[in-house]
Length: 87
Image (cartoon, rainbow, N blue to C red; front, side, top):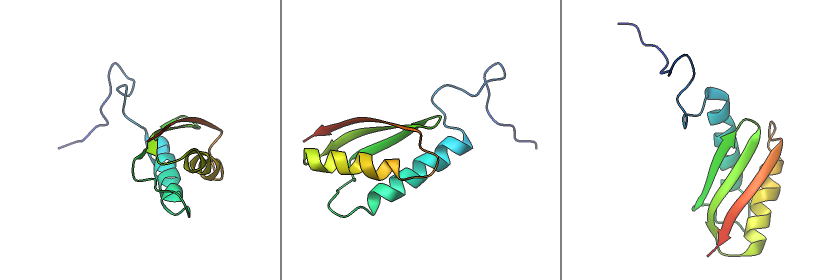
């Protein structure tokens, strides 16, 4: 049996992250998990190329800013879109 990557007319289906994007998302999420003073359990990390979109909720504005600053330190991140809500 031969397994092929799922495609739609030769293009990856919309909504599926490629290996590079998934790796970048994982590295950013792991970084956020280790930041002191940040509960990132409700933060969602999505990669669109080298742009990272942060969404979800945190307890304070300081935590949202801390998450954005930490995400910027990850190699390969070019831009951050911070859509984190304050709960």
